[in-house]
Amino acid sequence: MSGVYPAIEPDAHGMLDVGDGERIYWERCGDPNGKPALVLHGGPGSGCTPWQRRLFDPGAYRVVLFDQRGCGRSTPHASEPDIDLTANTTEHLIGDIEDLRRHLDIERWLVMGGSWGSELALAYAERHRDRVTELVLHGVATGRRREYDWLFRGGVSIFFPDAWQRLLDALPEGDRDGDVVEAYHRQLFDADPAIRSAAAMAWCTWESATPHWPPTPGLDARYTDPAFALAFARLVTHYVRHDAWLGDGDVLRDIDAIADVPGVMVNGRFDFQSPVGTAWELHRAWPAGDLVVVDDAGHGANHAGITAELVRATDRFADQS
Image (cartoon, rainbow, N blue to C red; front, side, top):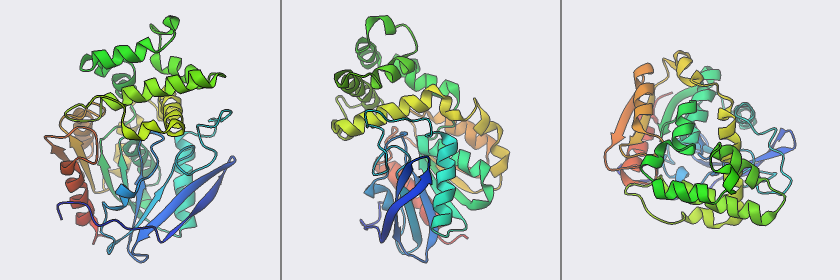
């Protein structure tokens, strides 16, 4: 199949209490007796979308999606004025995945993750190898400090100097020469809602500059929702300032834990957010993970070429146990 599968609605959904005062939204669609698959969204903070359901044959898969802590329909939402993100870390999310797996009585599943979701998928698989049948990753990232510095501390600005300057100019003058991530994190949690809102818009405008090929100007549509924009910017800066609690290079160093897990990685040739070199390094360390490069694509997974390769990957694994 060259495109996505027809739109389908969830046949089950709910809120799962995962502790720490957190409740995560989950949904299931497809064949209740089909091969289990889990989708991990990006961001952090993007939330799951109906489009992701369409990457799987509904007659072959039982697909599970959920909104990670603090975003989407999960509660509490990271846009709330007094939100405390202390209990929102990578280890918490990995624990949530296991809680959800047990709640749905699933033994093992294929795991798909894009962008931040690819980091989370790799970290989960390395800790719970026995629960993962295959990995399908796109916009591949491994959580190294240099990857975060590239996107959020000026590396990619060599291609987008005007957009980067606008991001800096939106900060107080005294914060423009320091760590941009730390400066925006402070602004996003300022007591003044106007300061929080302005910081979220500036951050999300920068996020809008880099994912597309060819690049497109302006604010991506999803960021026009102020609550989404604030939650997204807060969660991204929260994770980036802590290097996602992954340890610099740990995902690649621990890759032998999943040496025998079949996988497919799909990356755009012109992906400015997750340069294809990262996927290449991962492929060399993990030969069981096939790498497919889409020559005319950037980071956005809704690019027709990337979408086609993701569907091709899920079709390939549909009959494997």
